[in-house]
Image 1 (spheres, one colour):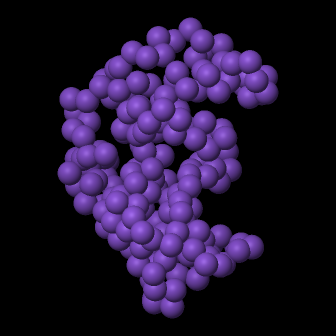
Image 2: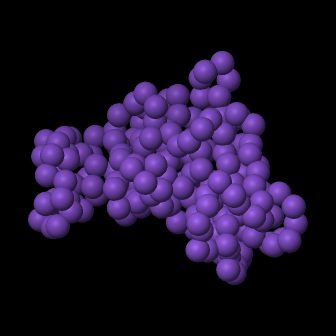
Amino acid sequence: MSVSTETAKARHGAWAPWAQVLCVECEYASLKGGSRGESYPRRLKAVATMARTVEVEKPEGNLLGSCSECRCACWVRDDVALLQQVGFKSSDLDWEGPFGWALQQTGGMCAALVFTADDREIVVTAMDGSFYIGEYTPPVEEWNNPNRSWESESLYRDDEMKAQGDLDALIEQCARKVIEFVRNKDAPG
């Protein structure tokens, strides 16, 4: 999803507590009339009053993502959007790969991109200013002790998120490293 985010417009989106990127229209549909709406009544009330299909300019701290339900472009928290883009890029680079990926919540509203291969999980995060990949053998008892790991250069330059072209290069580098971890089980990180 390499689109100039400086000029792009998209729907508002959200990282939902059930580990999906949703545009506000799909989030509303997911909340209304069900148990999720009962669990998140304030959020349901907020999205019910929004113009849910209106496209807006990029909100602060957001990047372009893709709704997990309808696939429309939507603005979502930058770390979540970056992880989703790594997942899409890995699929583009190795579409016949023996692995799948999913966004998952890691506690609170934090996000991780998890690739499952053989008896391993390759977990990608983007919370601390860079991409971090850790390979684990479930059940994981110690997250600070991966089998092997890799960390990208910073996603920021002078306390500002890098330009989309630079981010695209880091996204591709991270996706390629994930594929390397999946394909080469015994290679060092």
